[in-house]
Length: 232
Image (tube, rainbow, N blue to C red; front, side, top):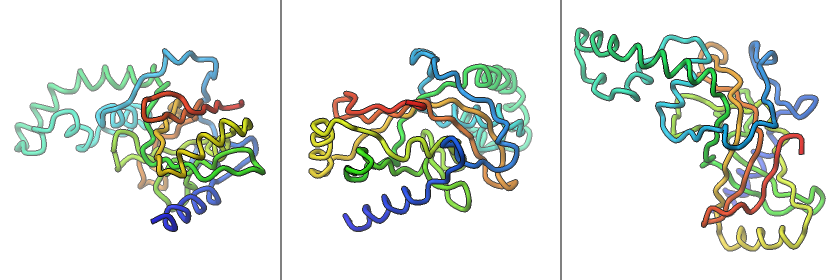
């Protein structure tokens, strides 16, 4: 098990796609995506915990027609509806969806728990812990991270390289964190991000592009063990 985890960490760290300025190369027209105002206060970030929120964000920013999966996430009874029932239910849902999608366009600062995240052992050369996560995978041929367990929408940071290493220059602090990792502790990682846009990569993979603003590693009590900000 330890060997498998170590291999996962090594591959994920080595695979991080880089471009100048620590921004990952993005497919399609994603190089023109809007960027975050990093001075935005934490209180402006909306927690994303439900599949419904993820689908609304994707459809609002991609311009795609609301998919059946999105509609099912909002009204599960649509899955068993006949064509007439489905049409009537969707008609009733439309005003609500329109309002939620408009709100998603205007409120792009989000925070979520990255449940795929792991920390590699402390690296003295970098004075940092390697951050291995599905979020950090390269954008070619590999699935990205997920929010709220929505497996059909990839979440791809455009600045993943800036968070490849989570810096802890204070060795006393690093030693305490490493001791917990060595004892089998799996940290909870909270991500603060700005949703830049959505599109189908290569016309297939539904993808939300985000700019990571901050990463926090939390202990079992929810206390911040370490924090790293974009540009910090």
